[in-house]
Image 1 (cartoon, one colour):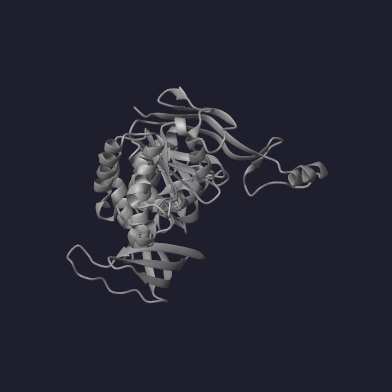
Image 2: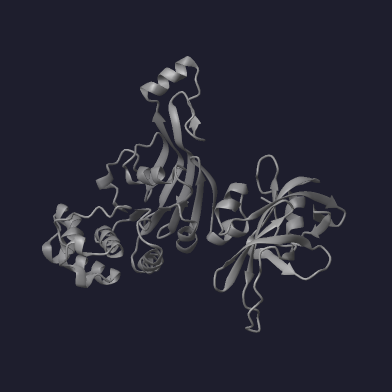
Amino acid sequence: MAEVVLKHIQKIYPHSDAQKRKKKKGENTNVGNLKLTDKGVIAVDDFNLEIKDREFIVLVGPSGCGKSTTLRMVAGLEEISDGELTIDGKLVNDVAPKDRDIAMVFQSYALYPHMTVRENMAFPLKLKKVPKEEIDRKVNEAAEILGITEYLDRKPKALSGGQRQRVAIGRAIVREPKVLLMDEPLSNLDAKLRNQMRAEIIKLRQRIDTTFIYVTHDQTEAMTLGDRIVIMKDGVVQQIGTPQEVFNHPANLFVSGFIGVPQMNYFDAKLVKGENGYSVELDGKTFKLDETKCANLAKNNVETQDVTLGVRPEHIALMGEGENMIHGTVDVSEMMGSSVHLHLNSLGQNVIIIAQTMDFKGEYAEGFKPGQTVAYTFGENVMHLFNKETGENLEK
């Protein structure tokens, strides 16, 4: 079993001498949006997560949100300022990295250039004085899983970026660690290689008995790889859930904007509570909400109020003229093959719509030209409602 539990984990970086001097003078010493206390800058604040055996967890968020710092605390490369970290029920706050039974794959591959692929993969086993026969067996097994058997006698400089990353992963899995940590391992690869390596990692986790904790700033990686996603901002967890949960039910404005490409559209609207449920007023038109959304809002005793209305580009429908139609003018039309991304000037703002280029009969739709006026609407089950002040999802 390889369960990992993080309870109230906090990481504080002490003030530098310069920051201490500024603080004495009463100057502002905030570091971006991170919290500042008398002890120092809080990089990770009250992080709580229970990771099940063999679960694939992805930590995702913008640069500087604390995801890599959290991973390094699990690895033992960063000291935990407060809280408890347990692996298999054992408290490991003060346990050395080499004794935690974890392995880590870095963004930079970190291969020894003077060693062959075989020697790189065998190196951690040699340090543990594993018998040569067992080393050879484990290296050969890992190489077969990762499809790098033919490269075992080459040196890293003779390999492509994707092949080097496979070697780095192979060096980690030969140790058969309880927990495999991966810190943005695909960020140095081009788009095509990233897609291939994502598929390789998915196949890998099905073949080895270990728990994965994966860090990325790429929400596509998070959505395709993770059993659950942990979305972070400014050192604080914003939401934990399956990819489908965070896409369909974002906890707040930040999550709704971070997950999904293109980003969700936002409108200034009014939520109206009526005798027969809730509706949204926008551009002088009324859009009813479905029963589930009405029930969630009623459960939270939500009253009539101004809201931020969010609708994803793929959930907006282009329509002919009719009731509850909102109009916009095409600014840009981006052909993406099976779909077209329309950028509209509508209601005094930019609105993005994803429209299919082929209908259900297999016929191609007419193209959209700049300056063309189009009408659109959205269904009663695709609207997301956020509090104007806090940004929290009103259905939460």
